[in-house]
Length: 77
Image 1 (cartoon, rainbow, N blue to C red):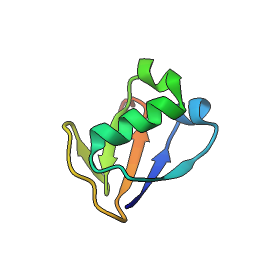
Image 2 (tube, helix red, strand yellow):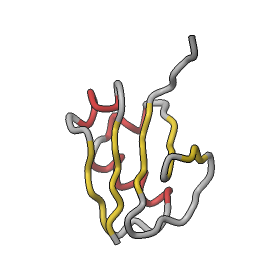
Image 3 (cartoon, rainbow, N blue to C red):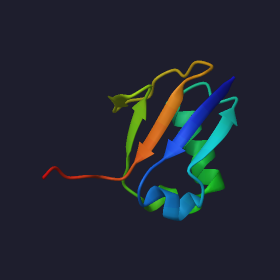
């Protein structure tokens, strides 16, 4: 199962890429663990996660073709 992960803002300073394609991530927790293995500094970084353009705050199941966005904290203005 392929899931596209898109990085924004200062997160790209850690990953050095704008996006990756991950497979075998059945849920958000396994995806985050995979990303932390690839990019260890993410473990100490605050970020928000959106799946298919909807913010999520808990572990959810991922489906083939989902798009996950990893975004640093932001403020309005």
